[in-house]
Image (cartoon, rainbow, N blue to C red; front, side, top):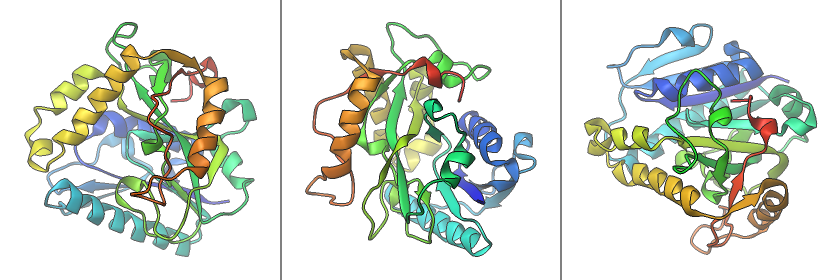
Length: 277
């Protein structure tokens, strides 16, 4: 099967380089489609071999620009399917759809043998820095070799994988007219909370602040504090339970988004994931 991955970024080379490395190794760089938000950016050399385009800046506050961004990416995904792609992965540059290594399969192989559904989700794993046990992150080693703990947050169980044209909601969090199917072997690892110092630098970034993203950045810091203070639970015991809850429970305010109660489940990530990203 032909599988593409799409993303849109602005001034985020740290994560984008890892995104290109990961999805390029899994799908082939020729199947990556990267859009840069703003003509004041340059296409980095590590994007060579992928499809990379610079687009005019989407101006405005975060709520407005997120709708525009996801409308644009939904249209690009539909276009890719018309060109012959069977599946399209949509994600932010700090999110990576990963197959559980215990399957013995890579991402392309696993998706190719899946039953075709309009929308498939990986179970959300919000990876964060444990301030008492982990130091500053470096780009020259796999993230999961440096970060061992994660908050099981339904916010990151996203509608990342589609097999027909749909309209993604802001942040890929939902798809209009479709419920969630959470695959038992797929995970969406989010790495936006892996380093407190990096988050603190973003809090002083005028470009981010001017578009109303400060509140979003502070949420990432809260993930770190949750992980650093919570009781650490066993992955293989807790993840199936929380996945089951998210498969059926929906909040009243958003009936097409998953929910996993108010308890903060924090787990240690198994070593089998440590070399993947």
